[in-house]
Length: 275
Image (cartoon, rainbow, N blue to C red):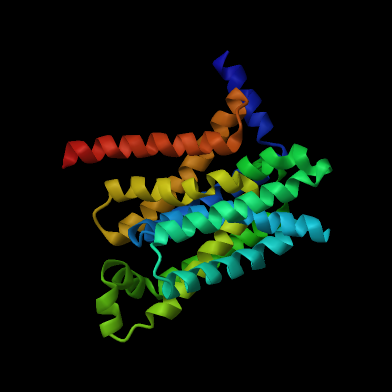
């Protein structure tokens, strides 16, 4: 019985769309973990969540214009991230309050706009929770390019990113262009969120950024190891989540997030025992 189930899953992953889905999960998990390692330490977790929710508005704009939503979503995400960054720097409102206003308003406008698109209502679940099985080769190319750019950026500026994360005031005192580095990081994060929307949807994208990074934070003591742990856990949970999803016929995106949660709970137990 178990062998027959294994063969069924093995044969399933011989299909091209399943192979693309698996690769998309690995790339998305690695990207989310790598950037998430800095995101949570800089207390930008809610920023990624707000960006993911607001991305639905970018998709709706693409639908209204009659073009591929992915082509609109990338520039929309960048402009949105830059606009939010500007507001955060030039207003006296608390960060969480401002982000809440922006993402809830964007989500409300997007849902109202979708209500006028009767022919698209059936796809709302795919937008909210993703459809990793619908990933196309172009999506994999974009994710691969973003991973390469992210690796180069983090690799070349690792010490600077670490200093900004640990002590931003000291980084400024040492002549680091904090605003420039912060802007590049936010743009990169926004692009990762935009590209990953099709894979996991607007409601779950934040989990890919936050959960693996938090689990890795509990397991590692050195910053370099922490980044590798976060990227590795993100990819591993995607692979295991896809296998479980295919075996039990469950939604892939939520199954991957639950797998990430299991890793986090395991890391919490491990941290409690070693502390």
